[in-house]
Length: 398
Ligand SMILES: *Cc1c(COP(=O)(O)O)cnc(C)c1O
Image (cartoon, rainbow, N blue to C red; front, side, top):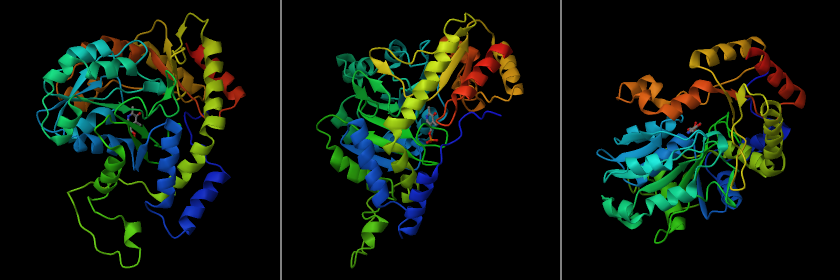
């Protein structure tokens, strides 16, 4: 069986994790801080906070911005549930909009969905391909959007417009007009979940790039506290002699990254540009070569002069197929010992969202993308021979 996305765990990772375990410090400490600095340098931003998942990072930032009941947050209908569930956890309403055929949020639809209650927009870099960030940044800064924004607290007043928070769970290392994801929105959140391009088993990172007058260094320090019970000193600071007394500044959250997890991330990031991304790119190119001139298939857009993907998911589509035909093709691919997947079942098709009144008929492009999509295996250890096996299995099945 060719698996879909096994993690790449080698001796280097095992040794670094063991070193963390033996170091005497296993939770948030020197390795987490080093990993944060490395991500910041990689993405070209000043400040990065590591957390225990992308979901908790997204939710932490919605809470920081003071989003709550009565507020609306615009999200694409085509994404993983995490993007919208964090909005529900805040007591606010996810307002879903349709996407383009490239799977990315339709900025025109975002504009049409903005109301005086809109507090944030969460575009998602599906499959690792960056959204149209110039258009999104221009939109949140439009005079009419700023003038209808109704701030409810000090941070909202400071920003003076909806927060643009990128769900970049897939797109670490992707490029948009010469900049990396992380540096393209006010806040960008990466995921290091086991199936993502770079993994710490579970984990995430929040990149801060808020405009003046925000001081992202100060905000980083506040978020360190906010992600650790609101306690004024972390456990490491308290181990310093005589430094036991602490205060709790607010009812915080508990979503800090451990040094055991960061140990994996440090090794992974060191070789991400030199080894991981180039191998994933080769696999993408082999699939593109194999499928681009076969009229039964539609290959995804993954590189233009403005954008380069992080090569997270190769979202192949059948050129002409209904949802049941796609499902049948997938079954035949599985029968040939190849694991494939669908990214994603649109939110309005899932029980949690259907019962909240969302209807897939309102999102025709999302449905069309989904109904014909088959995600192919892409991972560092997938060999060229296995890529050809996948291609053969898919062609035969279809
Ligand atoms: C994986 C994923 C997340 C959540 O990441 P976690 O680290 O598991 O919380 C969020 N959004 C998208 C689009 C994802 O694929």
